[in-house]
Amino acid sequence: MESCPSIKNILLLDSEGKRVAAKYYSGDWPTNSAKEAFEKAVFTKTQKTNARTEAEIGMFENNIVVYKFVQDLHFFVTGGEDENELILATVLQGFFDAVGLLLRGNVEKKEALENLDLILLCLDEIVDGGIILETDANVIAGKVASNSIDAGAPLSEQTISQALATAREHLTRSLLK
Image (cartoon, rainbow, N blue to C red; front, side, top):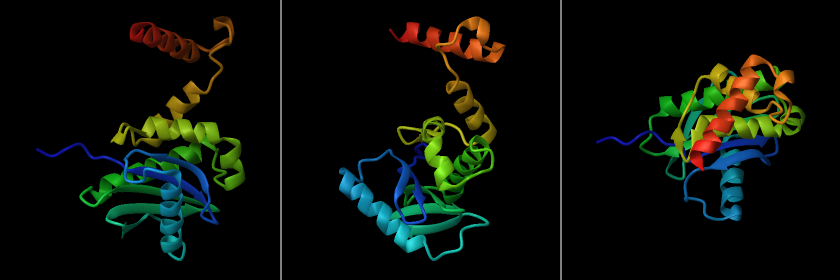
């Protein structure tokens, strides 16, 4: 029986290979120094490629790495060597497009750092524990936008959708207690 497709990590690096945002979902890189070494190595291997118009796929340390560059940001999605490249590419495209929507088309390092909370929420909406949850950029950006509203605001000052999101959050919390 085939297992569910899984992601090992999602990386967002700058044009120098430094981490902007990263989420690791496997134990392949147990220490922070191992994670940084992987990021530096994968950046070095891919920096001379032209992955600006569409995603590129490569094998690296027995992993499939799908990547795409825009401005001074480099997007990477890593999966195991047995993963389907098209699924990894779909996750990458969903992440890439959702970040573009959340940053209002201004996809560059400065803007990404100013909105790092939205990017990290975006990662949480796409993958949980290595399992792919969502790849549609509009759905991802919508969920992130609804999560980033001020839940502490009085209900009278919230829109209907914000109030429903707040009510759903409170209901979920009460059920999980």
